[in-house]
Image (cartoon, rainbow, N blue to C red):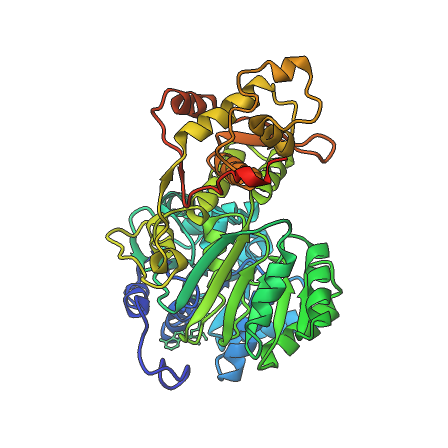
Length: 511
Ligand code: ADP
Ligand code: ZN
């Protein structure tokens, strides 16, 4: 089947092992990286075993894609989702009941409807596959409450093998998947997350980083790429700016008309050179093998999201780049958004932690690919030798003393000022300081760095959670972060390291 139906020469990674387990009638959890060929793991057993293979999938677009692809290869596949007409439904059910269908794609809510379960219970099932299984976990980055109901499948179909597959699951998410989907006793297949074709880099952006994005895209003319934007407006305006600069760029987000989106997707997939400027609405199921770069104009929400989004590049196995632009303002914005969302406390804490872990990786000193793979639970990971940090190992500089000065300045100023004013205070450059401010011991105490040097250090303190930025009518104010951590810095127990020496104060420019 691998050769004849799918046209592949050999199995990849753990595909064969996973398929073997299912063919032996056992349930399993398979964690294979994006592009690792998860779909074959349930498609081949569905075809090989007697009975119908059920595939639970979270997105209609994803189902439509897979079903169309399978049919093209002559596989008897269909989907039942909310967009199907009554006539299509009837036809699909006829095929199911005649036993001529190998694969049926359903949404979780569609599957768990009593009438659906009743009809399916009369049939012989080859397996039940749960695609994107991380959606079951609040710990994952894409929690979907309707996935929770899928645990009942264990009782409803006790003799049918169940296969949960996902591309992104840290250890805690895997535990959740196993508990929620009742896969406790089953084997877990976790493939290496290494993507040696991906060349990673990240850089702090200045301002919104628009010009830098345009520069990066311009330097990659002739190739196709995806630029992720944090907002719909951002995607629209960035696509327009790129188009103005002569780049064949299109915007893609959930605010666009369905037909417009479908047209743009087709244009992107067919073109030799195309740049999609998109929100995260663009992604799952987009399979363009020759995407040569993914640029995050705004950072993703977590390392899982990062790896999934970057992973859309280089699917043909040829070298491809993942470039992330980020700033402390992005982190503050992300944290604020989590704060203001209606979430269970536990979910909120997980999201905050995931955001911080992402920035810790972006700001990290060691190999990026290795950091990501360790995050996913791999051990004994070697540095990739090709990311920006491997190629140019940063020289760590101890900035603990300066950090103490900045923290105590924020403390003494009582969280009343934004970063510009705090920097002025440290440099003793505040225009017309009040006697109170001029009398503080931190006033003018930081003449060792330039203003830019202090801003870098303040960014670092924000990334480490030692400071936070609170909104105040759109003008963020600096306040102390985690108290315990701040005290550890004061006491000298916690060091603050910088990747490079902050820009020094240049006495000749002093007014
Ligand atoms: P994902 O794990 O991201 O869901 P897919 O199942 O969509 O991955 O597969 C990604 C791509 O890899 C598809 O184009 C698929 O045809 C291809 N593929 C899957 N298995 C193999 C294999 N054994 N050999 C070659 N290509 C494969
Ligand atoms: Zn590296």
